[in-house]
Image 1 (cartoon, helix red, strand yellow):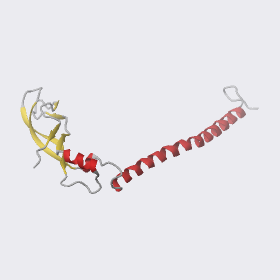
Image 2 (tube, helix red, strand yellow):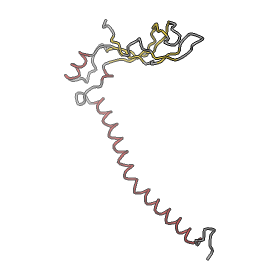
Image 3 (spheres, one colour):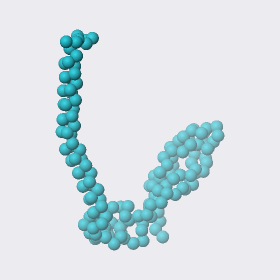
Length: 153
């Protein structure tokens, strides 16, 4: 029998590799049911989302169904805390305007929620860079609120 550098026979090394391969092969097939269960739950979740949008009166509507979303830039005067210079900065806002009419598949609860809904905007930018050439440091947007309600016209 041929011996390897470690002193163990070469044949047992080959058998060990075969046993290891067979063990992992069967372990692979044992994990397939777990994969199928997770795939099934994923499909059920997406079917629920599709049904909630297509069947009227069965599922409650989401808030985004009441609004139209739009990105806007607004100008604000901010003061850099490092150099103390005040400048005009463009801040990005996500504006959600209330729709004129409620979608057709709404029920009584959705009508009540829609009546209370107001147009609002959410600030997207949290930090800006100073416009002063000598400073150029980034600072937090502290003087502007993060959510603002819009006046209904």
